[in-house]
Length: 429
Ligand code: AMP
Image (tube, rainbow, N blue to C red; front, top):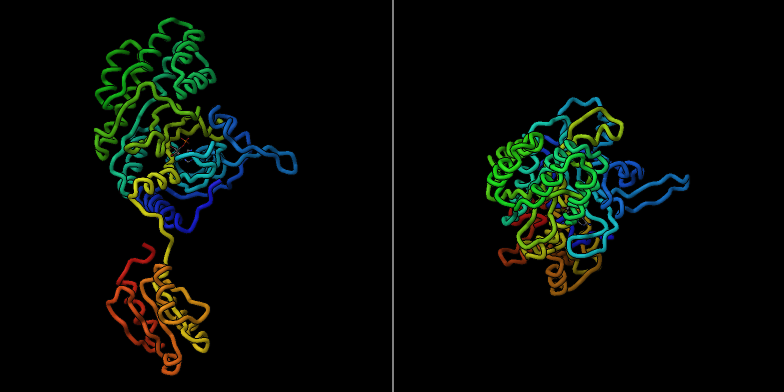
């Protein structure tokens, strides 16, 4: 499982901060849940794909537990329980590590972060569209420019199957096949289970329809399916979602894939994934899951949401050298030049921190040239040298390593003057 190392932390943190900024901007309340859940929470509806990749174990009392593979089910658990009385709609957000027993490879780790947004209590297309808009906003803010939305609607497939009398569980299995690209097997199952022959033809018609710009493709398919009233209603819903999202997201970025299904079997309607240029796996995705809350014991509550794959996006950004991994560096390094100046240096360093300047302290004395080398290696911008002379005069000598100045400050001045260092460079960047 992944650890996050010092040079990876700044990028990880900035992605998390962007997610949190979006919580504020769009009105999502952040929640946290434990990484361990009961097995049953995911067994009910997560789908075969997820179930076969879960870490499952027993506690000492023999209870079957899992490390959460995703966050929608835990959030739905809150909405079914502790938050069941909160006024609807309720928008919830999370940043959480999830665990899947995947073979580690590009973009696939056994421990990875999801930044997620879920809206409960609204069936309106505006809720679905908001998901796309937030994802779009996120990508722009982190500097990803080449991306597109792959959208779909499992409501269309479900409508065709329901009309032919195919049970929900069988529908889930068939959509699972579709998701794994086993289109012919999916069609074969529909043919076997459907009460009328028409259904298999319609199902195939949808699954085989070529992907294209969303609105045009939806309209083409609606013309084709004109007799399948319920399927057309679902397509109309998708059309509204895309129209709304297109008020903000560039329409050319939204591509409708009629044969698209997602691995989680709780999806009931709109679904989407986001792909970056040259990335074959999704940077994130989500969809509508109207039955999930009631399924785990809560009141009937529609829901829609998505997760941003923060770990995968981090890898995407570093691989394309949009960002260079770098650990946080101190802004200043305080270096005693003699054994006798360590005490004074210890106190002076504290004055810098009181002023808000990230300051590291050398714990032993070095020569001035060695102190400079060490400061540069740490990425410090300012070096504060304290020798015997400084101790006597109760001063510190502050040197800008980019060569702009070298000044003597009295110790009582540090607090006031240190603030000016902050303005000269961005902290933590
Ligand atoms: P899913 O819940 O499978 O739809 O995943 C949503 C997003 O989480 C994906 O699009 C990825 O960006 C990310 N993700 C899923 N599985 C992994 C993994 N094993 N490692 C890293 N990121 C993942």
